[in-house]
Length: 282
Image 1 (cartoon, rainbow, N blue to C red):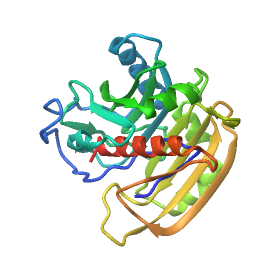
Image 2 (spheres, rainbow, N blue to C red):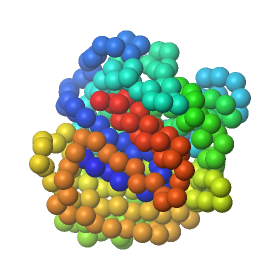
Image 3 (cartoon, one colour):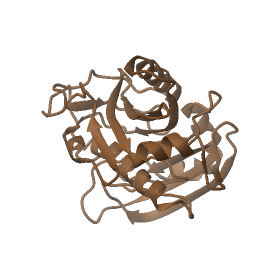
């Protein structure tokens, strides 16, 4: 599955989905599986993540961005690969107690704005932490140090308290997506919201993006699918762009399409963070 998230937001890609009747442990991490969760909206998950961030460490934590995915198939995903995620200038360290696997509950991808899993990136001016929420609890997943922490804490803006909830996002794009939803089924949905960015005169407003795709979380080589993408104001719900791409290759990876003109350090940081979000659930 390829999810293109515009305006430099972290997207989610998940590989190795295993439909299960219950939970199981895949080893590694902090040991064991996360509790079985239920699908949740962005606002519910964000509230849980805020409470966890307050208890995590000192400082005033700000949410720079969030991303979620909704899948109709329940699964348990290993977090083993987070141990191999550092890159030059940015060190990723699995948080203490990160479970070896995370349960993703099934969620209706096209109604209610519910997500199977949500990620939230927090900074306090010096530290950077990625939290994961599967509807049961919000847990610290990774700490990030180096240039990536400096970039986010220096140039990214926090999410506004008035940011739209995910059900409002799905409603805002309903008319744009109606023909696509009527013509396609078995959809996976991705959500992403950025608080905003200001860097050397470049300003990016706070924006929601949403994507519906017929590509599943596990695809064989050569598979193709149809995808609907939309971008809208994070507090207004005004859709600024939408598009449909049919018969495009499916993949178990995903990409970020950052704004042109961003400094290489920011682009590198975003690329690292997208890999971290994906690797948590590989």
